[in-house]
Image (tube, rainbow, N blue to C red; front, top):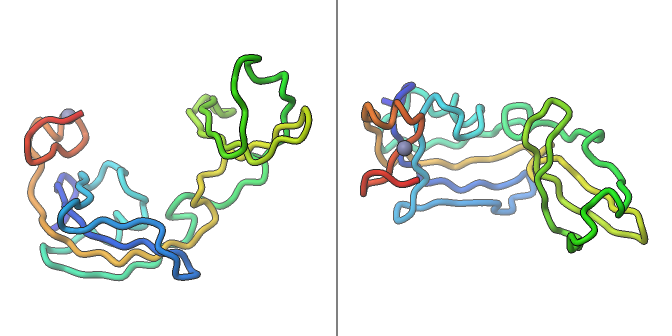
Length: 160
Ligand code: ZN
């Protein structure tokens, strides 16, 4: 049964409300994670708690329990001169920066018009309701090493 400290292999299909497939994993290449460490979105982690191997479940997760609501304050227009002079700037590129709270954030360049660079720091899935169709492929207790590291290790042992 899935509980904190379980290493879980999942197959899943993730779709948005329009029914478009955003991501998937199958039995050949499952998602392996350690329950209770927030490696997956909170709404999915909560929905999986208590499930056994072989369980199948459809879960609908609102933005607040997934990647958060869209934050208009994270969309801003900067001047080209605020970026390193030698940085190649193009639409769609991503860069890391520190947010107001010092946390690492990923910004995407939305548009470049003359000297104005519009960037968006929202997660690409922010504001979206997520629909997961999941199957629990296996559940086991984490090893002491995995618990110490706070993540699952693959079938071949350690991989970082
Ligand atoms: Zn490790």
